[in-house]
Each structure stands twice: as C-alpha cells, then as structure tokens.
Image 1 (tube, helix red, strand yellow):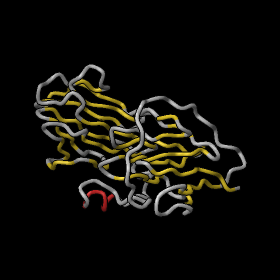
Image 2 (image 1 turned 90 degrees about the vertical axis):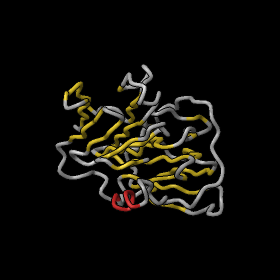
Image 3 (image 1 turned 135 degrees about the vertical axis):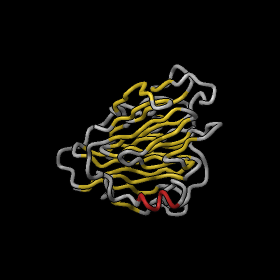
Length: 230
C-alpha cells in the first residue's frame, strides 16, 4: 500500500498510509495531515487514491504545491516523487511495480499541467451544492459491463462503455469526477471542484460511492445515466 513520508529539513516527522479515498493536507485541524505552519493554507492540497493509483491536487493554495521542484495543480504520483509544501516535504512511496490505471494517459496529464482531456465533451454549467451522502447500491452479479448515456447537453443520447480502469468525467477547473471499474462494481469519486457530483438528486461527499443500475449522475450541470448491459 502506498504511503507518504512527511519530513522537514531532513527530519522525518510522520509516515502516513494512503488507506483513504481522499486525504487532505493543510493548516486547519480538520485535515487528515495537519501542518501547523503559516506557509501552509488552511486546506492546501489533497491526495486521491483509487485502486493502486494516487494523484495530488492543489486546492488553490496561497503558496502553491511543488512536485520534484515543479509547481503543479493536479499530478499523478509516481514512486519516490517528492511533494513540497513550504519547508515541508512529502515523499510518495509505493511497492506497486505497475499501475492499475495504465489506461489513463499520464504523460498527457503532465504535458497539460496535470489536467487530463475529458472523455465527455465540454460541459457548461456547475452542479448544485449542499453536501449529503448517498447510500451505496451494489452491482448485480449478472452484470457484464457498465455504460454511461448522456441525458442532456449537446451530446445527449451518446453512450460510453466504461472499459477503462478509470474514466474521467466533467470539466477541468469547474468539476471533475472519476468512475473506477473494480472487481466488485463501478464507483464514482469526486476529484476536483468545490461542488460535488449529484447522484439521484443527492450530492455526494468526498468518499467513493458504488453505482447502481439506472443511477442518474449530474456533473458540471450535465446529466447522465449509468446502466448495465448483461
């Protein structure tokens, strides 16, 4: 399992195992990793871990976030990458030799400043707010494949088969979520934006949510239906 090694001036302060879908870093005490230093924003950055992959997101911090000396907004982490927040460093370490989400073009992510091209077409308006957790719906045992069909927008009616380990949906800078294909079903997780995805009219929280047949998802103002084809 991947972990982060927190250090300052070469002194190791803490080891953090990435056993949560979303781990936050910042000065406020409600963060998973609290760094009580004025150079660190209240909510500075987050690490989202899905399957065997982790990626870092700067949460519009005042002083920015560096990876291996380069400023980033969103970045897929690799073994031995060093995240810098002021004088503090977080070294990312994993014993996984291969990445479960090899279907994603990580090179393109880095070339574009860490923002992947969306698999959906550009979306125009933000989703509604008010946080509320939605109950998980298990995948039926006879399911072969999951699909998304757009219900609104310029591409309404278009279907997308979720063949990749991770499918990115949304609009960078506004709202982005990923659907992870796992052995026990399909799960949606919020990864970017102040507003969270809506499933069946209920806004999600930071944790992954299992998708059920005919769930209606709203991301960045676009509605889509998740369904199974057996």
